[in-house]
Length: 170
Image (cartoon, rainbow, N blue to C red):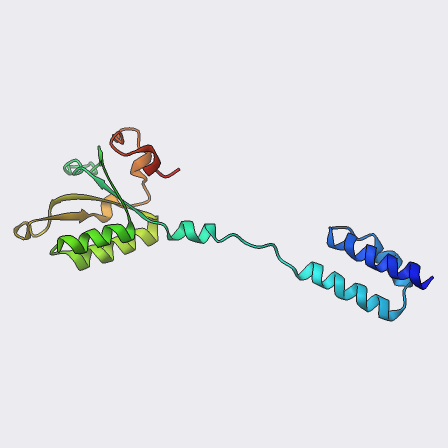
């Protein structure tokens, strides 16, 4: 009888771990020491959690910077729009390295704006043009107005032909 109960507890624990619970009613006939063994095995089964993938947190930290041609000029009652993207495409870190290389006059401002845009939207759109003040010369321009929840890469009237297919996020 003792041998039978031991088998029952061992087999039952395996069944419980696989998602069953067949032994729960029968194991009450076991002695208290056997019950403790079964209970501790059951607790281990219940307490284990499936491994979570870190890809969702990795996706959240990925940020791409896209270079567009200058947006349309602002008209009364209309918003500016991007109409075409170039083949330039960087990761956030790659873009910031490029900013450092060029020794741009608005480097610190760009760093803050890119970090803010990345944390809010996971992507950033910039263009090369004359900054404000114009006397300081050309630089990459980031505009909050052009970096909202709107995904310019999915707009039908935006020319993406120069961006390679693998560059486009899915």
